[in-house]
Length: 134
Image 1 (tube, rainbow, N blue to C red):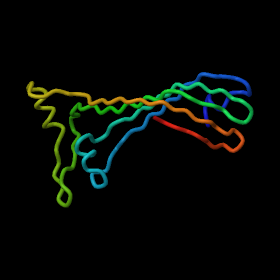
Image 2 (image 1 turned 135 degrees about the vertical axis):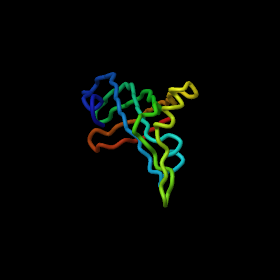
Image 3 (image 1 turned 90 degrees about the vertical axis):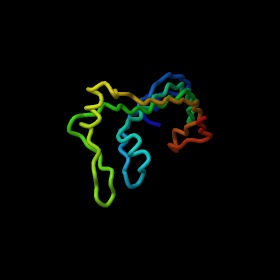
């Protein structure tokens, strides 16, 4: 366990938060559905936890929230290869023209889901036992 959670002293209870973000850039060859459907996107995870240490073990429980987001904003000069052996390109300029003419608009795709976590951390071994995410 890293961060604030590792700083809990024996017989102490501490509230702490964690935050992670990742940029998702799928390959058109490995995951073509995500590549063409979304392109680049971001995934952010936040967690709020309570940790209580008793001897060598720390009981941890809390809530984790994941947010996936993809902004479509048709940047001038960008393009996406859509062919495999003889690549053709879809140019963002084409979509930007439709936005400027009032036939399309920029938009944001967003999804959020959450779950609960609980587990027991063995501070001596540096391992989790009975860890569960629902």
